[in-house]
Amino acid sequence: MAARLPDAADVVIVGGGVMGTSIAFHLAEAGVERVLLLERDELGSGSTSKAAGGVRANFSDELNIALGARSLEAFARFGERPGQEIDLHRVGYLFLLETPDQVELFRESTRLQNAAGQPTRMLDVDEAIALAPIVSAEGLAGACFSPADGHCTPESVVLGYATAARRLGATLVTGCEVVGIEAEGNQIRTVRTSRGDVRAGTVICAAGAWSAHLGDLVGVDLPVTPLRRQIVVTDAIADLPSGLPMTIDFTSTFYFHREGPGLLIGMSDPNEQPGFHLNRTDTWLPRLTEAMEHRAPSLLDVGLTGGWAGLYEVTPDHNALIGEADGVSRFLYATGFSGHGFLQGPAVGEIIRDLYLGREPFVDISPLHARRFHLNTARAEWNVV
Image (tube, rainbow, N blue to C red; front, side, top):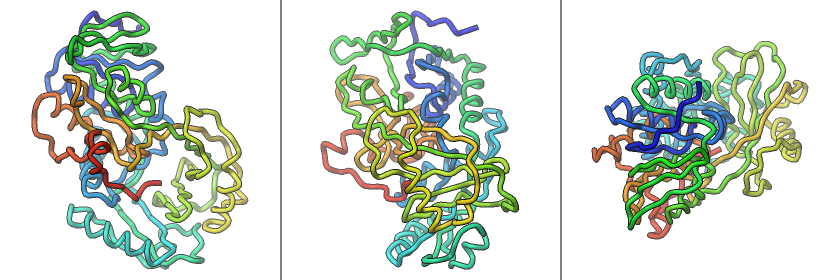
């Protein structure tokens, strides 16, 4: 039976992907009463269900490293807390590098990751090929490998958080779109939905690619742009190593990891125009074919069994927006993750819980406040794919 929309809540979370369900779980676990999550479709039906499932701490920014590392710890214990099998494969992330400049960039980020306790290391070409034997060595200058990273199943993560949040007393309502937020002065009073109104004093935006519109409802600028990314899945491939890492050709952004007996394959498309484009197209496939021909030519003979399109939620500096709005009381947000939201979901759920409760988060997230774009204090994360 579908959950009934309550008349009032202490906190309303908008968005039922990994971010929203993680926040709901962490708030309910901390004893917050009347936690209400609203999702206009089904849980996980937005960007989370379209994610490649990669989980990593291999970033160039210390804050992203901290968020990734904290989340990796949570994913490793997910079967115990919140209690759900997520098919976690810690096979590592392997970045393939073609130029001395790329090698130096990853040497520097490796030093940052090592300082944070991550076992990332630089590899020579032979070591990289030993890990991913379907890769061509031609043109490679080196590689970077983070063995603690890997991939898991996004839908299972959402299910685990949602089930535990409900068990702890949170209410999760699907098929319910937020159409307005009413305030008196700078105080939020009512959340208007397609199924009725809810009295509430706190709203948390976890709406992913749709966050800019939600921010507009309360006059908060959340510079999040939707950008389509597409993925394909191959037929079975003989002799794939069981420990094949998540492998990324850094120059082209072509990446793959094991998906059952085949591979899940993706790549960014520089010609993609921003917008809510969720249909699959073939326009990116020639570029993908070119990248495979260069870096993994044996894959050109492998058939495809399917694929899908989803949306990245991109900010100008490819870093997340996490914080509480300045102009309206108790409007919090966790959005704009630019492709790494799924993997940071556990850590961000903790952080939003702490911001709501007035606690100090485990890491200083002030650099991710939305005001950075007005203060010109943004800093770019370059290790994005």
